[in-house]
Length: 481
Ligand SMILES: Cc1cc2nc3c(=O)[nH]c(=O)nc-3n(C[C@H](O)[C@H](O)[C@H](O)COP(=O)(O)O)c2cc1C
Ligand SMILES: [Mn+2]
Image 1 (tube, rainbow, N blue to C red):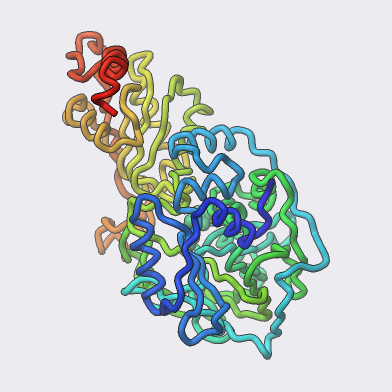
Image 2 (cartoon, helix red, strand yellow):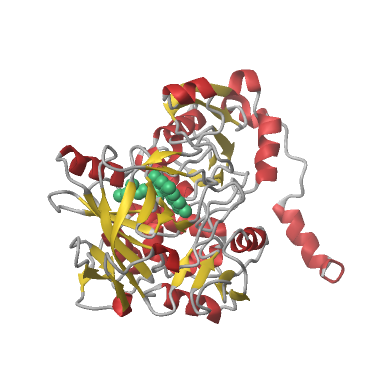
């Protein structure tokens, strides 16, 4: 059964023994530090902070929402005990057959329990964390959904784009080039208009996940989320913008993004997913907030980017997108795909991607490498594509390193491709290139498969065979217990 909002999700996680409540942590770095410390633990829980000093005791912040595979599976109705590998395989199948379900408009919802208009609203009433030490401010929008619509209202887009609190009624909005809200807002600006926007700061994690996934331009993440949930998302019409807003979101604003010629503010720096502060602080557009809505005892959802290998969505869903694309590109016998750094979501950046396959013909491994590099999910902020044989688990870094170290001859089996799609978030862009705005970088495809031409003469592996292992485990049961 679909979970309808953040509270139902937290309840379901609690039933799994997966929620930890923390009282009295400070918004200034303490919440962020605890989120990061827990996230690095193998079996970490969802964190629910309350009694945050300086704020009403019942105003809460939730962290580590779905960055564990158990809760990531729970959010989209999969078996919470599923392995990370199976989760990625499920996503690959899901992406091959999306079944969009449009949202359903309702008259009212818990979001409207508290309504503040332009005169009475104040964005400082929430215990918005300063997440990391070098952050330039407090970020209310990390686990958020930014809602915009085409000027002709033909479709509604949701994206996760970071939102900083500037003052009572001004927020900073950072949307990277190519992302849909950026294309949409420019269409308004070309007409000399401000772009209407709504943002939620706490919602059903399935909807948030959909907002973080690169679905094609013109396809609404609302419909994609409906498909994931197998039931429509209930929305109210925003009284100011007419935009659909999840009826049971925790906190939401309506407002507008004026053209930068009219208003912009310095945004950032903010700790980013590659594990650095590469983008720095720059003038960015703002949201002028016109209305604020929130549930009583609101839960602000937080998901600050954390240094790899922590994965925002608990498993590299970007790897599923690459795998899905490899199948579409007709590359046969793919056994698995994994992203070890980034790859949280398709198109979100995947600098270390491993593809495992059963080699069938000359050049098969190289074809897989080129295709993985060519698709959107594998191309943006990429670095290395490693292709391994089917006996290597792409999710197991030790195995991958062993394959590279023993089956990849650097001179003959590494291909360099130049001029690929990069971003200001890429820490290795040289300063001059960064300043000139040349956002391209190189990629390497490492063919770490046994050379196809003589793979049958490749030395045998020195490891216990599955047959002998089974026999010994059976016979020596009592010793091995
Ligand atoms: C936690 C998180 C934070 C993100 N922050 C940003 C951001 O600040 N700016 C941005 O452009 N993309 C950000 N992204 C990536 C976009 O949400 C993602 O690429 C999404 O597919 C964009 O949606 P769109 O294709 O509708 O533009 C973030 C993703 C996640 C998971
Ligand atoms: Mn989109």
